[in-house]
Image (cartoon, rainbow, N blue to C red; front, side, top):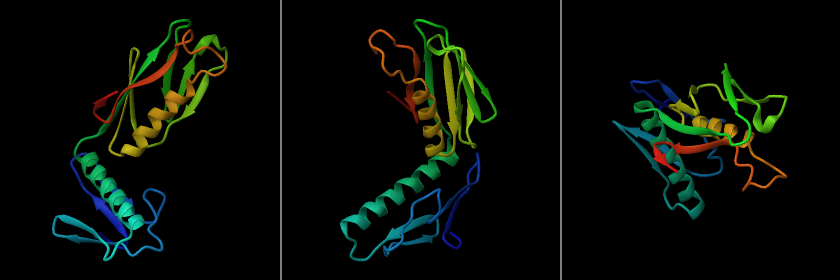
Length: 170
């Protein structure tokens, strides 16, 4: 831990969490102390209130996710389902293009966050990243792009759906 920055090193990638920046959570106004003792990270607060205890547990969960992410990538799997029109999905850099969704002539474009690896194998999309938040956000962006509005969901069952997230089936 160097100057409010926590660095986690692993075989896959070096992953940094900046305390008080956009990657992690601000702890302004709260007396939460984070220190490194050997191989352990200690997060503590003397006489913590309920709000500060929640913040301590949140920070601890994010640090555990960082350590898990550098050891083994987080993996999200999505399935492309089409009953009316065949859907094609293409990845070009950080942009995903969904063509022929519900017979639409204009393709839908989705911006994916950088720092993820995307693999398309037939009707299965696999998203991997050491950062759980980025992988989850990319999967949610793809799923949300094919949300059907103003039609009966029982009839129009086309779309991209998550089938497994971060190692557990849905």
